[in-house]
Image: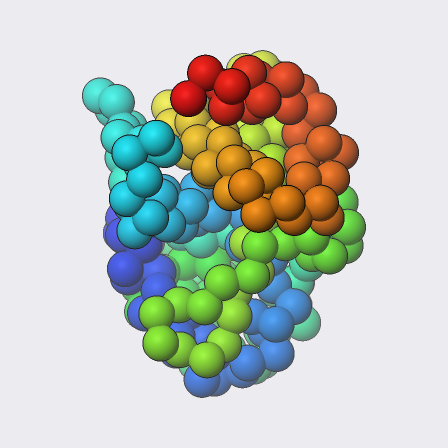
Length: 206
């Protein structure tokens, strides 16, 4: 395993990745803990008192061992990133590691289809860089984390990541409602049916 890294370090890895092969990030969709940590960073930057960033509880962490992508496959990019291919000493499996960040490749989610999610992914620029990253929609991230928790996967950070996704959903829905962005609101009504009533109830009490 690679050492634990912060989102700032993940960002540096993504910048270099884009320089090496821009098409990778154009296709890739960031999921899992990496997506959660990025959404928490956005909550921090937004500095909205109604929707503060989520702080980790005891045993949880703002660090990650890797960043997971879907909608891309390791074998398709092995040669492109051949200078960054390493081998796990325990399993013998090859993986890509850039700037100390290990890349994971998720073929499909438990509750989402990568091709569908890529169409509604949140697209963000990293600081002043011109390229975009695609991040799993927060409603889909919430549903995925909820499923994993209910199935007893047992990873302590899952609760932390789900709380981040939920908080970002609340903020994003609130903003979309204020700006009357019906297309964004419809995504929440469709993708976040489990928490849609909770979102609207929360907003009515703020």
